[in-house]
View 1 (cartoon, helix red, strand yellow):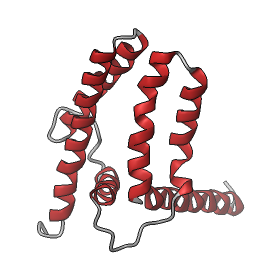
View 2 (view 1 turned 180 degrees about the vertical axis):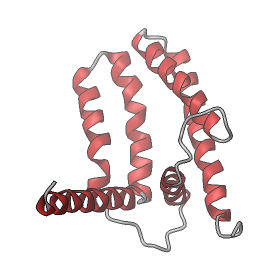
View 3 (view 1 turned 90 degrees about the horizontal axis):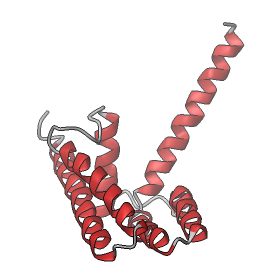
Length: 158
């Protein structure tokens, strides 16, 4: 590998890291986080209605969501901002997001609940879809709160 190839790889790596940093920073804007929660409600609705355009629009909206919001003020104390910052810290610490350990077991429970909510919506079982979607979101929010508490205590452990 030539020096130039190494420089190109280093530049690509730096650009990727900047992109990831900007993504996380913008995603930490509470408007970004809460609008993603709101958009997520439309996934089972689109499946229930068999509205593939709505499903595509929701998927596109979820994908580009952080682009539409500015970085939050560094002093922002919203629950959503705290949760996103904690999630980034948690993932950067290679703690994983799904597993049988606490609190990742909450996300492990979230996956089949969310999957069943989507299945129930597609099968047009609205009560089952709504209940399992609500349980899925409860698990997700509980996971966020659990890692946010650890994030808040991270400096105390040193």
